Image (cartoon, rainbow, N blue to C red; front, side, top):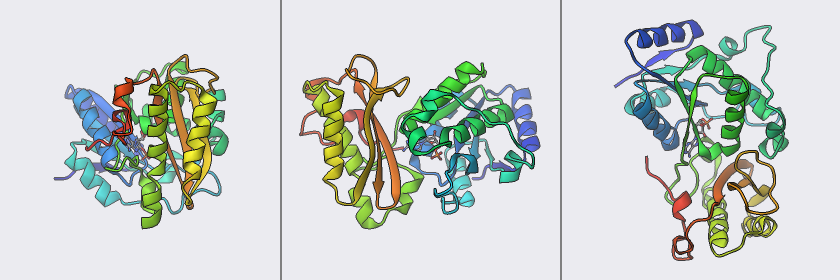
Amino acid sequence: MSVAVQTTIARVRQSVAEARAAGLTVGLVPTMGALHAGHASLIEQMRAHCRFVVVSIFVNPMQFGPHEDLDRYPRQLAADCALCAAHGASLVFAPPVNEIYPLGFATTVDVGPLAERLEGASRPGHFRGVATVVLKLFNIVQPDAAIFGQKDAQQVAVIRQLVRDLDVPVRLIVAPTVREPDGLAMSSRNAYLSAEERRAAVVLSQALNWAIAAVAAGQHDPAQLEAGLAERIAAEPLARLDYARVVSADTFEPLTTLDRPALAVLAVLIGATRLIDNAPLWPPVHPQAATSDSPIHPAIAPRTA
Ligand code: AMP
């Protein structure tokens, strides 16, 4: 099994035009490669919506800060193409950096205050890089639909804002987070973890599960929930908290009461590896669904691809 791979914008446009001429709808799955079961689930879900599925693989330099992991981010195109083929992708778009950012490139996309909060505050310029590359990919592929993972919840909100504000004619699909059996959200960055760190990394999903159960048991004070999350992260010696917040699921603004769709969002350093995760807190789940007997709550239960 193999999948067609294109590295230039012109060739991708040609392939997409041919698919359209054959009457196929077009779906886009943007990724940075080092593909895992989370990405595979995105490809499969997109196949249920569109007949021609384009997976982009591009480690986007613009979304990395100067001291981040751009150089060591895992790159494994051959294995990624095999995964894409196995899960039914039609085309892989894997451009070199100068195809996306040629000499003289200058225009960037700034989505406003949403991009300055939380991930945006910890990683200045990150969402400008994300919004710019995603808008470019939308313009290159011109898909009917594009899919993004709830794992990167603030990224989803940023892209919703971008699509709404700039009238981009694309349907957004949001996919649930795929987890390892112990609850750790799958991520290409999990590959950085030592065996000891990998064991410690489960603290993120455990803390989120605690918060879900606490809300179901009647704790509706965001400040208390944030303190409880921080306490659980602090109990893991290999973990260092960046943030643990309860925010509006739409704007990512902090909440003082749980009166609208809310997320618990976490960013935690495990050793030198920065991991993020999130879980819906409001509306609450049924109390019986969240007890100490169910250590991994169904709301963020591991999913197999
Ligand atoms: P990345 O390659 O990390 O930029 O991710 C590409 C896409 O896959 C983004 O929309 C992510 O939100 C999504 N994704 C990453 N990890 C997961 C996961 N564990 N489950 C579902 N989607 C994911």
